[in-house]
Length: 261
Image (cartoon, rainbow, N blue to C red; front, top):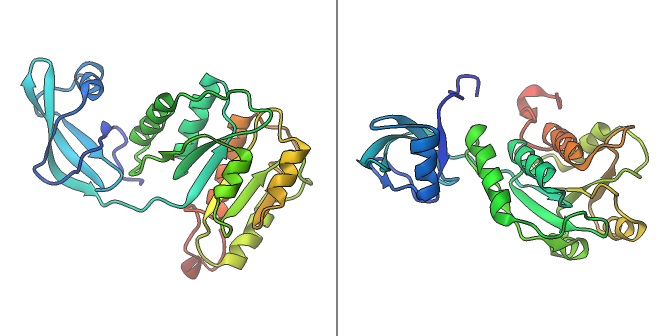
């Protein structure tokens, strides 16, 4: 990504993208293009939809207050989203906005709100969260906008997980040890990409019943995130960085590198 033009304006769209296609943005995107970005006739921008890669398009004015986007050529091929789920107890609004943006930036493919006994917020504005996810994808050069799953209670979420899926259980009561080494052991045993769900609880932590419920499940790796108590939004970034570095798409090709780092 070192040669990528991060100054280029990007827009997520839902329609199919192909050379010569003409895209009519919805009212919100029209306002963003014409009044926020202040683009006009012939100005370029990049489009992506999570399926067809990234395409260069240009603005074609159809009236003083409306524009179409004419798709010209593909700039990047589509890449597959990883199989990384971030499962989290919802927070209050501003910190929740931050947390979902950072989870998207860190490469989570699916974000799942999980309601626990100490969850602070139980009513979730899905439209607001999706807008934050898309904004993060647009601004950070992502080709995929993560899926936002429906909120589930902790027990229901655990029941729906495939039994072979690895759950990284971030628990402040876990025995303090080196989480990188624990993740490395999992990576060495698996030998290939592992479907992972990272679970982080609310500010008050998990209670004993919930902790036992998670630990009864097969394929659970319980880790500490260090000697300090982290706020949930900080813990999200820390945990996802660890997982991506050791198990996810930050890993070097081991066949070429011969080692994890």
